Image 1 (cartoon, helix red, strand yellow):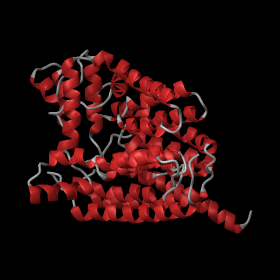
Image 2: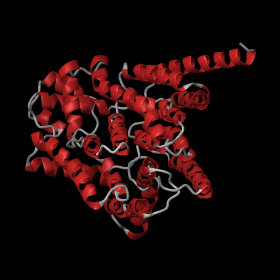
Image 3: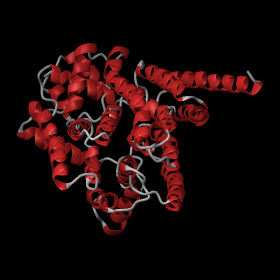
Image 4: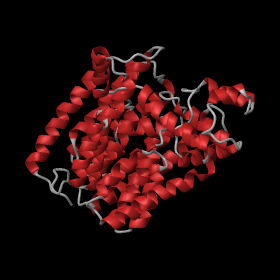
Length: 441
């Protein structure tokens, strides 16, 4: 073996082992209030990511990705407290209480649960005065986690919440190279997702169910591409029942099938979700769920760019209430969606690439852009690699600066820096795509 090969192998192995140690530290020892230490380790992980995705084989990267995700799953989330709400909702379902009908505070005040266990979860939960916003398949998985692993706020229950994400992520790592081959794209592009630190930290580490949605969506695309339309529609419907966001992608199928088939596809997606909602259905359920979703998008603001600028200027100069801004800004992602759906020629190479860019436009104008939202954009972008999303998954880590103090306070400078980097690289990507003139496939 040549000396250069020996040194390369040693470097790869050292980088991989060091990355696993850094992941272990982030998942077990770094509170989100310690922004400086977190972002230093996050930066080191992205430096390693840059080298590893170029040097590791697909098989080795798969092993590394699975090990890193297992390390992430066997930890109590330090960077997010959302999993306490997952445990709460799952416990309500197990106890025969509809999670869509009661706020956590209402449950506590009316003593509807065991006071000791309920109070422990309540004390660690965010948004205790809001009804749950998680669709029904989430609720079934939360309930299964509580039934199998209990509701303590310790490691065992945290792993129980994450186990579905871990299994889904392993499924994603296995299917992504196969799907890339079907689209005649280099299977090594899967490494951009497999090894990405934000994906590993936010999904298996912080227990965000985008990981389950991504797997279901990719399987749906695989079935769609292999002409199994109705199975594809069912998997697409299940993805929607984890997160409503994939509904945004349905118009992109307009040029992929005739009107009747598209209508039937949409009916299967919507019908499956209506069926899954049946166990929770009531008039109050519809009112509470829609109210919570509207409140989330109209009242919350995090790591947003255009929304923050436009809403602040509109209120200051014209006195327009910020609650009107979020719906008004939907015109921009809707226009982008219409263009991607109806245009006969596009620089975007394939359906997943169009999905990725559609979602990116949606987030550019959203009021809330949490880092884990970008995992879906990344998973779909590997079918036509672009630099902006790789950079965005890194600079989105700057948003954790917000959590360094109570009450939370964003840095407008860091948010501006984040999006400046993203838009510069997006413009660069657009110029390169324009030169290559990719057509639809």
